[in-house]
Length: 201
Image (cartoon, rainbow, N blue to C red; front, side, top):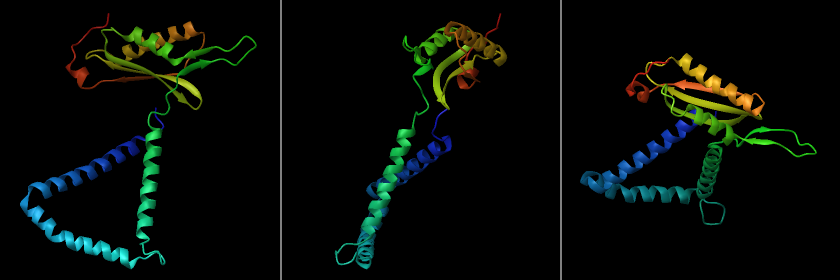
């Protein structure tokens, strides 16, 4: 439940990681391996001469400068803007307000999401059926939605875990006097496989 596409996240991380890996490996090779160092020292003048030739062949009018610098600056600006947008989109979707009544002459009632999150977290903590739990609140199309993520201990039925979470959500609705939309995620993993078994009574 995040406005940032998961595929885009992984693609950016993969590309950035590969670029840094290649650059780091090349720097280490040039500094530590004599063959690479000697080869770089021999080819560096040719590379510099080639780049200088490109700049001379692409003059920008009578300015004496190459228009390739403008292209490079534009590309860098576009990449910077895209990265900035990508960074600003991270974590979006979370909301602090769970319920908000319409304003009246007597004022307005707002229930913070932290209230429901803490109540549910307290209800889930210490339960022997669960290895871990996490509660967060997201804004989905203008509506606050609770997300309850739980990891079942080995030997615990996901249906029983779901029923337990549902009972807590119903109790929360009764306490708040309003039905709050919720998404329940029941998962397992390494911690579940290595945790001890338990039996529901």
